Image (cartoon, rainbow, N blue to C red):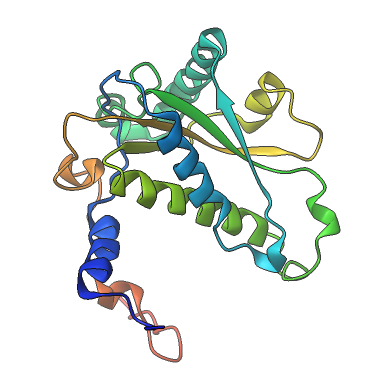
Amino acid sequence: MEKAFSDADREAVYRAIRERRDMRHFVGDPVSPHVMQRLIDAALHAPSVGFMQPWRILRITCANLRARLRDAVERERVLTADALGERRDSFMRLKVEGLRECAEVLVMALMDGREHHVFGRRTLPEMDLASVACAIQNMWLAARAEGLGMGWVSLFDPVEVAALLDMPAGARPVAILCVGHVERFYDAPMLESERWAARRSTEECVFENTWPSRKDG
């Protein structure tokens, strides 16, 4: 068995990574159930610390529940804008979710009972959250390969959303995921195109051996 992928397969993996986008604009066409199952299967094959598999996925099929989730997001959007001070107006002009237009809404959550999982979490308990993030990324890359857009919505009160979805004590929502067909993928991340932020360079993010000293002045 060859250890490395073929040139075409390898390029496909890197292409999905480069072209993945946090999408907020969708068209309303439904997503095939078979494709949705492939996306969920991709999430369930993510790495997890101690093989705890802390992810739980809630598929939102009730229109009223979707509307209530969007209301929760809108309330937090306004509160976030107020907390941004001089950038408030710029933030309010951004489209931060696609809950009305997307074909599928999934809520990715941390399971309850995570305190019983010690392997890999004794000194870094947040590894449960890191594992869920890996599942989301798996789904995101699979969606891009399928030609589908996905957007990660994090503007919500987790206590409110947990109550809305009848989550047990200890479970916690991490992301509202919008999935669906798109007219086109953004040429660059939307927040980069809107000049909200710029991608950091390798030099800014990768150090050798020790953290570099901050220069005075």
